[in-house]
Image 1 (cartoon, rainbow, N blue to C red):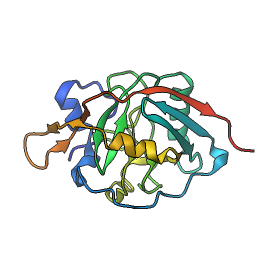
Image 2 (image 1 turned 90 degrees about the horizontal axis):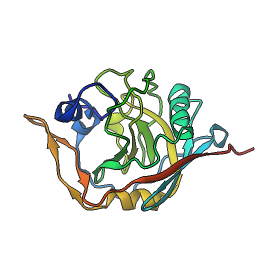
Image 3 (image 1 turned 45 degrees about the vertical axis):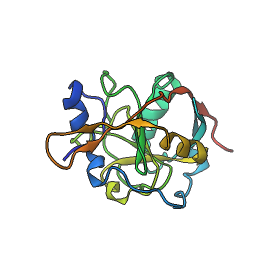
Length: 204
């Protein structure tokens, strides 16, 4: 089974293959007109993600995924995502951002309670369910085969049109793995970057 990319000490194609498990359930599926999942509670706070294609606002669900949210908030506050690319875009599936997984950031235990609807934000990991760290993905379509396997910790509540625009960029198709099924690891032809990610205050 292949898994979504996250931070490990592995390098090169071996890392990518280990880090993409949620791709095995169908790498390119039409998004259709599915409704986004319900927004996370405003009290959990929000993160604003300014990209080269526009702004997305993510409501964090601290109640459902407290450790994952704490990790993400810490990284955002430190400016860790600023200048990082959405290095993986699979139409009808997910966009994924980070540094590709080569760093010394800590991991967090898996918190697998929330569903994967349109705009759901989750933490990528390798085969160890407690190995999520820095790499996050956003669902372009409902991905129910990921439910209970990957930690959703937020929801895009503004900027779904930006999410769709990123999901529609031209890509260079890359397929990982020796046998079948291979894993889609498509890279944007023109880089799509996070210009700045920042914490917004929680609603009163």
